[in-house]
Length: 60
Image (cartoon, rainbow, N blue to C red):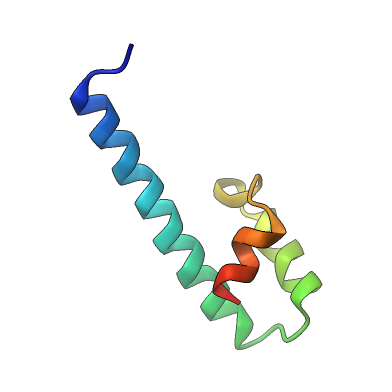
């Protein structure tokens, strides 16, 4: 069972990862024009190793 504080902490981490993913995709997009190559570069980052192509495409 999660406490309210744990739930809020997890929500904050999720939002932080989403913002980080958005920033990473935006910055890499300036240098990598091919989506598949960009996706490969994103998943090399250990924080985003488990993101799906759909999650990356959302910010592409």
